Image (cartoon, rainbow, N blue to C red; front, side):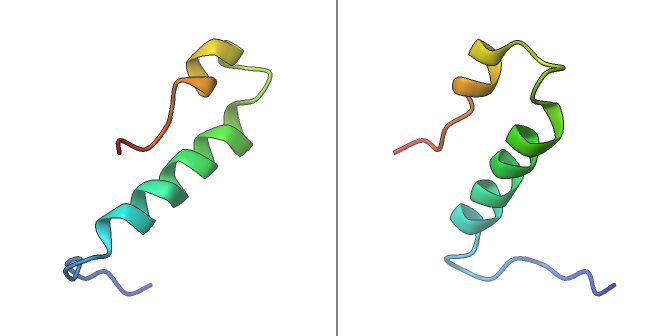
Length: 42
C-alpha cells in the first residue's frame, strides 16, 4: 500500500469514494435516512 498526501483537485474524488463505501458497507445497519444524508457538498 502506498500512502501519500492528496494533490490539488483530488479531495472531491476521495470524498465520493468514502461516501460510496459507507453506502456499500452500512446498508441495513445504519438508518437509511442517515445514509441518504451522506452527500457531497456543492
